Length: 607
Image (cartoon, rainbow, N blue to C red; front, side):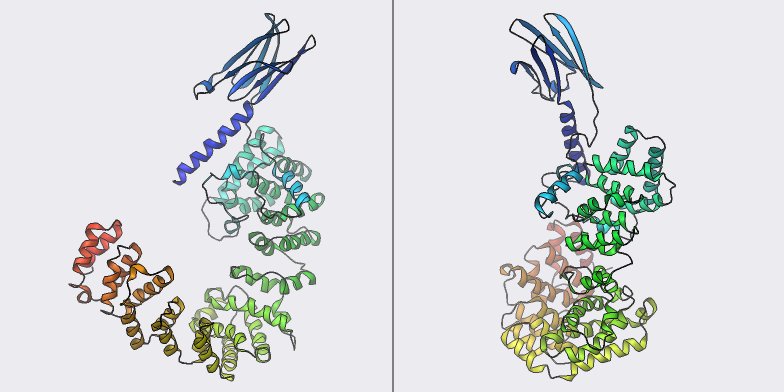
């Protein structure tokens, strides 16, 4: 479903739900000891006298549901009762008893998005009091934002948009409009203005300009008591998650002191941690303690948001928790890792003459990701100092083959750095680079790791680590890798290792080996190995033609594209006329237009 169709479907579904809820009205009168009730819904109108249904009128068709009026009537215990229900901006019910008009009751029709939906903050508080956590709790507005088959966002996943440096171009404009509406609301409080603001912030583009709104709101002169009242109104009425976010930003512009315990609970839900953090940051040590609480009770996007917005003063307890206890999972992004390093004062901790095994292990887990990606060299200003002390401690702490692998990864990463660029864009200095890299290299060369590497390949365990250690320490691992490949080990990292090393003779031998296989029978991992080989053939003009031909016979779009891009860098004489018929077949039968155009150009001999 296209994004536009999805939007229309979602809007229509929600509109129907709100209209149905608003159409559900009850009118009641007492007459001479009898209770007369008219129940009006979107689908039918029912007349009940003394708890007995006297008449029902259903509107089963779509056209019938659009009727502006409906009459129900009946008799009971000598009463001749009739009721007429109808209206447009109001829903009116006129009662007639024994032919006489008794009374006309009115209900104003107000289609407010929040009116008939579960209010989120009371739901959160009640849920937490009952369960003690928000694990596996679905927010009550889920059906508003998602169609049945939609992929759900992880709680708080919009944080990537909150903290993104990439601008959409409309943030300031939208924020300015919203600030004006808030200013007008404070000047002339009215439900119409509140509802207008509610509808403006309830959709899922609000996070994209939320922080721009926060910055502009901070510059607005406001009556804090009046703003607090409006913030509370939105918190009490919010039935949509982004309205909760908006309410939290309003609250953050006030003192927030009276609501810290409520904010503590809300902040423990990943969906709202970022906005609780944004609301309370800068409100002193007590607010910072709630941010710390949010970090300890969340795991993913919420934890990251709380960490980003955690400001000074950071207590020793917070530093110690960040240093030793915050989970360092494999999917943790490096920006978060850098903040953990910074806010835990890792560099200061490593300056000690001696560090514990626990601290050294945590330092390894933090520093390796920060070294692996060169572009992040400027992300953590204290990285050079931290690494200098880390290498000093490594000389005494690294005693086993398993412990040396992180150093090998660092060494391989440093070897790929454009150091001139790093020196210009970060705090790194040439002398620090030399001390760190030479210190790592001395540890790598101080012991004979060769027997351990040979053992890893012999046992078929931890071979990827063995390859890293071998490369970093200068040991020739290619014969071991080649032997594993031709003995039937289809592991992508083995093929990558052979390709990276650039041993032409061994690579050609591997190409000859894989050309024996029936490609259609390979499993996904084996196929990934073949793809790596085909990609590498771009650097070996005219090599692997049998493999290329087999790949094109599969009518597989991905393999087909890989072969075409390889031909594009080969000499024309290396693939023509050998592959002329294959290329013509692609031109005629490939379902991909880009593939057909590409093959047609290759038939002409490149550009």
